[in-house]
Image (cartoon, rainbow, N blue to C red; front, side, top):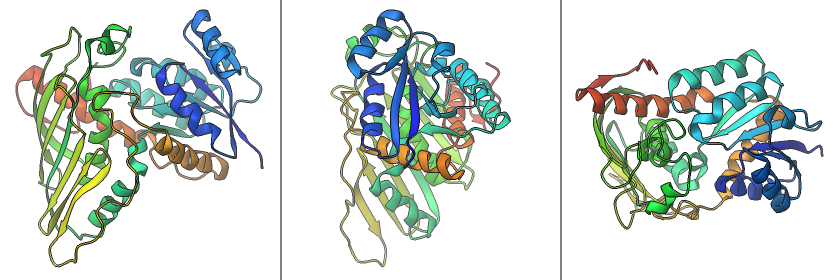
Length: 346
């Protein structure tokens, strides 16, 4: 079996999750890393024991690379992605795809132009409990959808931002709790509820000394006329497990920290609620999550590359959560309801 050779750009904490996932996949091998400085590259080389670079162009000359995974600061995905796609490398990018729609669209376009696959890491899409919920919605078991809520009411200690040069910054993070922490659950909300018609929101910086927001709320109207309530924060001590709540005419379901904790459908007998293992929650510790779902998404992406099949979380799909968050920011700025599709002038 031929192993697909993978290189990762970025050597921060999330890189370890990807390395652990790749190590457990039979037809994959991590062969190269690229860091932001010679010092960080040296440290990464000592830790991982593979070829490590401090320059993206040099990294892309590695003779074996099939796939590039981008794990840099969120607002630095574009430049590395453009170079990798033009070099003919398939791309798997950590969420968000980028921090605004113009930059996201450039990534989508360059991958299409160079006929390379583009995937974005939203590993929670692959949990057994979420898939059970999604299938039930698709089958119409909950009836007409009435409301969909997403709550990511987390806490981060001051050191989380103080020890990072980019987290919470507009240039590196694209915002705060919505763009960084909340986006995973927002992605699930959109995947179940469908496109958003409009949003009315308020975000603010309540606790941390950062440029982005650490507290916010939004009221969403979906295209199917259902309503939704979104909250996100990194200021709410001690940090609660993230929740996805789906309500239909015939029943409801709630995911908490990736596990089903509520499941009620009129006319159906009760059944075991949880179908999968909890992969951890980042409510207070961003590294509390495991790598099992990353592994599952990697396996799907590798299969798409190997068989030239569809990518399950591709660029245009990943763009939707960025569009929602950018509209939320604009609504808060203008203090009025904003309609989607949203035109991002940044």
